[in-house]
Every structure is written in structure tokens, then in C-alpha cells.
Length: 248
Image 1 (cartoon, helix red, strand yellow):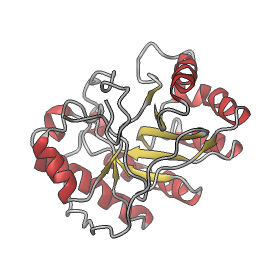
Image 2: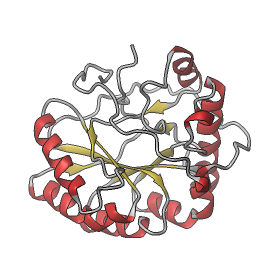
Image 3: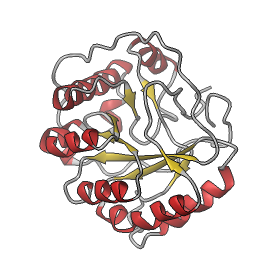
Image 4: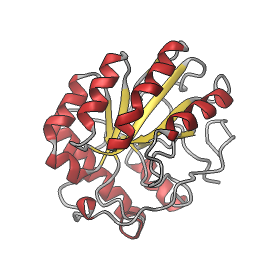
């Protein structure tokens, strides 16, 4: 279920993947200094607006094609990225920002046993990646996404550090399921369209996808659908009240 009154979803469907050695670097570096925001956040838009999001990047095998397609269809998106991948592909991250997309933290390790070991380990990974984004792009953002979604991991003590560090944690309302290993034929496009048709006008449309070659290969079909059906594809900003699964 989602907070801020959108209650349809019970939580993330995806299961933890095998631990990825390319994203298992230890947490290092100083804490990202979050400043308390004075401006009130506005609710995410409902209706002919969709918030596309991509996790786990940057990925040189997919990112450039995704960015090219987004540009072709005048679409903006949000990229929740892992620190090791940012460090290995800084030019891609800068290109995302220069193209008008939003960027946020997906942590460092993408390993449940590490990032969710304690509230402080969670905060350290998120702050460390936000600091890397700042150093790479000069963008000072508080956008984060929990690996595998916030439920059931974000319990009371985790919620306290999220509030303390002024994180804006986003889950999703539309799971493309492009993360499934068998989903290589573009089935995720139909998954998204079906869910969008069910939720449009009822909940904000926050679409979960990943920076994978198989996603990039079939993304154009989805972007074309949104364009032809009058949807505006917008990035997420800190000024928007986050959508996340209901924690209580």
C-alpha cells in the first residue's frame, strides 16, 4: 500500500537478486550534508502524467540508448543509481543531468544484508551515493530509492533516519517486471500499459524500470504508447511529495 492516500499496492513484487559483485563496494566517504527544505512539497500529478524511473545504473550497455530514446520522444525520467556505477561512468551521469533528467541514490551495495543491516548503514549508503552525485554533477539532491523497494525493510527506526537526513524516498506504483530474468522479449511493455490503464486518473503513475540492455531494446514501444496517448513524461523532483509503500 502507498502512503499519501494512494492505497492500491501492497508492496513490491520483486525478489532480491543475487548479490552483484559490481555493486558491492564498501561504503566510504563523508556524509552527504542534507539541509532542511523550507518549501512545502506538492502532490505528484495524477492523470496524463507519468514518472518514468530507471534503477541500478548507469550501465554503458544500456544508458546511452535509453537517453537517446527519451530525447527522441521528448520524455524526462529519473535515474536511481548505485555509487560504483556512477564512479565508473561519470560522463553518463553528467549527460543525464544535462539532458534534463533527475538523478538520485540507490545506495552502494544493493545487498540486503549490508544496506539494511541497521538504520545507520542504510543512511550511510544513501548519503555516500548522494555525495558522489554531488561531486560528479554538482546536483544537490535528496532523492533516494531503497533496493528492492522500501517494504518490508523500512521499519520505524529507518523512517527516523529518513526524516533526520531529509531523504525523499520513492517507491513505485507500476512495476514493469523488467527485472525478471525471463523477461527478455519486451513483455514488460505490456505489463506497464496494463497497469497504467488500471491506475490512470486514480494514482500517480510511477513506473519502475532498470538500466538493462533488454529494457533499452524495447523501450521505444512504451515511449511511443505514452506519446500517442497524450501522456507527459516528467522527472521526479525534491519539490514533489514522495510516493512510497505504506509502512504501517
